[in-house]
Length: 353
Image (tube, rainbow, N blue to C red):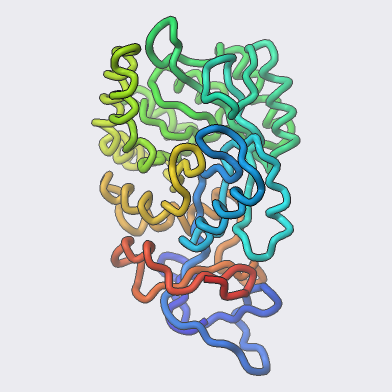
């Protein structure tokens, strides 16, 4: 690889080599196929669902297409934030992104999308969290809030005592916990119970933002998904007008919420929520959405590269790391829109797209 190798935001080198699928900065003997341009670590989608569509689990052929779509967009590391499908076969493929799994969603009975989650009652939460902690790759995914049809609006899914015990059990087993949360009311209990991350986090307020910052709880805003809120609100207007109005308010303040979180020091990472109702391959759009929210371009870029990989405990462009990188014609630090047009995608040292 010749050109500009972005090992870090300010660590730019002229060359690296891929030998036997691994990165080295020491020139090897012999001939090499040269790739030129601006190289980044393989992009990270920290909220993605391989093996899932709007109806539930999909077959392996469909899951493969999803993973290939993400790969060709430059996403080479996925945190799969909940899936009922067994996608372990992906780990044996040298041509597909690497996947960090959070097991299957854990939701309250009849309080989530049908066919997605284990739907249980609070008394069983600790047991199911332990099960998914053992099944996943160091993460567990809770559904922290959802529409309560009797109330007609979003309400928390879990009592404080049960969610605290469940998060403690996950931590005992060496897993981190994240939770889907749209609204305001579930956030304080989850953070004070020790949660590690919150997905969407549209309900952050002036009261809870300092708490997230103090505890170091990360957020993955999934702004390309939040863009669908007005459509969802329109569909639910007749039956759940209170919920619809709430969803519109969350959407209207989405950029202000994300910027306020970032300014307070809350870690923000890129995730698309692909695999439910959204298409795969949207990582560049999500990075651009973060910049629209007011996050500086270099920080938005780090949220899908160096910073995201460090947060997930996976290497970037380091000596001996898997040779997973994406090459562009121009410097993505100057304009993140460059991410939408990768010139080359390299997985385990092989030029694949």
